[in-house]
Image (cartoon, rainbow, N blue to C red; front, side, top):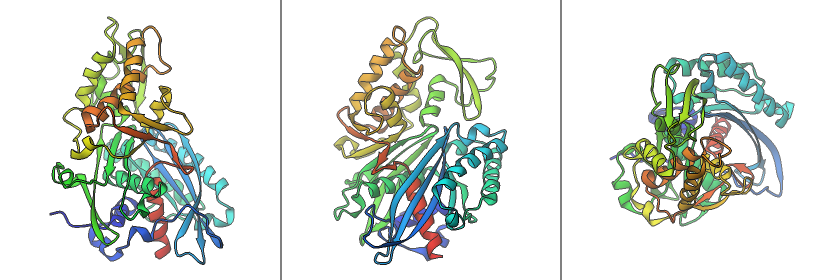
Length: 428
């Protein structure tokens, strides 16, 4: 049986890459780390922290403001400043110096958000996700080394473990911590938590606290389960990251271009694209020639058959998803729902899985007569529909909460990772 690991230790794996033997000396309860979002009446010391999220399609910086009260043992999250730049670091796989310039540009955001006198006390952290995980190790390391060089030149607080690649499981766990903290569910006595669905460019994550034992027992392996201690009891998260099943990687798989060679002379065709469309498309530092089917073979049914090959048999269907449950979906789930006119681009909204399916049919079956804003919208909506239904096994009637921000904080794993890193620096 897999050993029980406190939840904070799972977070530490992402933030520091420490071994379990090293972590046994730092057992902490998550409730002693997570701050609340309400400003205390008598606040005194303000602290800052900057987290870089180096994703496959962009690099983002989150600058958090924490307030430490004399009357409160825990810090309070008071504010977040967010900015992003495209493309992601992996696009500079052959030009690591250019990746360094991207980080330098985002550092200007931190310098504006953090008072000069606090720079030397402000932790600076970068965690790379699927974009760098998909690269050859030597190229990924060259990018990390360049970022480390830029960090070392900065006036901020840089520790030995400030720059690294985060594994997918911890990405899912950290996102779950962030969303349940922001929605106030971690403090609920009955642990009525929400699940999370994160769709990046290179990978996708699902994480939730199961209600049925069979969900854990039917999981394919230990890497689908994260065990932790909380409120004097042991709980188990169902969590998994699928590298290669993010939205952009899903495009590659649908086009049959995943791992392909001879890109300079191949044209990758798909019935998910308008029949008259032909263009170059870049992802992960490589450029692909893509087109629709010039013979006019297009539409939702044909597209779904192509997409299904990239999903079916790869994604495990957790046992209890048939029973429903509350899930927050963000990143490309949110972005494509906005592009399709399904939700508000500021406030998000609730959407049934059948909502994605219906709009995918409309876009795909009319894209030749009424070209969508993006030529990939049919493919992306169909991929999301297939991922949710034939991948994870959600019913058409399942309701997702699509959001970009919760209480004015970006919905991502970054807050969970920064909270732990920030706390670790304080106790050491």
